[in-house]
Image (tube, rainbow, N blue to C red; front, top):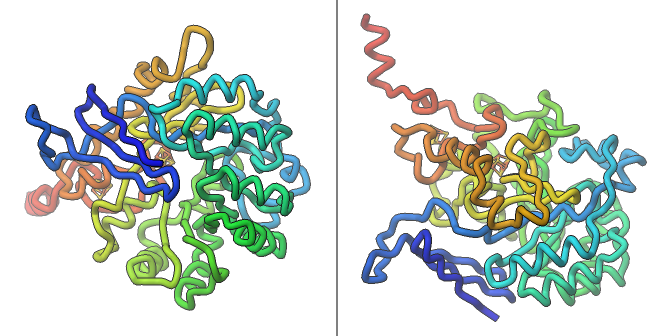
Length: 370
Ligand code: SF4
Ligand code: SF4
């Protein structure tokens, strides 16, 4: 099934195919309904919501992610909250029906370990929302994989480099699920990424490998952040820029690196940070934020009886977050595609253009001549 959302406030249309996950947006439409070719900055309601259904991580205590070299950005080792209740999840879904396309189930643990996993998937579909999620695969069973095949659009397995990683991918593929690999790209993992991309060395049958930029949030360390002057970063984007036997994607946090290093990626396939523009996060405690990496809830809004998703979307904290994207790097030729990168963590932005500091080459020459 396909459906179209008509955004009257921001004057554009988007279409979503619930079977394939294909999603397209028009540019801003003029008074005659013609596409002006200018991308809308935001939607009047999020098209994708990251729903943190998990409040705690059973595997976190066993150090699963630490052994895999991953620093949990949700601090799953030390923070515990109750998982999201079915009632709260239903309340979210009912508000989203026909206004939002997909839910990315997540939070502080594997969503497939939620006590009411099947019910969450069912409620999601009942409200015309395609559920997707990422898992370590550690607790995945053939029964859970079959549920994914029945309800989910795609399931990603985090690249934890373990026998259970490969077993989970096989289980999902066996159940007919579109399976992706999610690969956290940091200082400690970029060499392996280069090697694997060079040799197309990811499991047969996967749909895509998606690279997620490591960020210093939660237990993610500052020392693992990649820097723009690291030659491996340019080598990585050169690999992304060439064809592979599987699709290669990246999170929107990588977009500054892509616009600076990739020549072959179609610009229309790049979507820079969509936080607060087309997506947001709702945690198990019903705090809504523009992005799940806003772990300190600098832009968080507590949902409840007097604060629904639409109201939080139009709230002052969300506007403050958007202001970073609206105003960043005004002189850069890539501004529309990149918007200055991450508003939360400037240190992850893979760009050293002068325009990031509000300068141009002319300014620098002038300074030198003075
Ligand atoms: S200067 Fe700003 S907008 Fe331009 S590529 Fe760098 S981060 Fe992106
Ligand atoms: S706010 Fe930062 S971490 Fe979140 S999606 Fe945007 S770029 Fe990525």
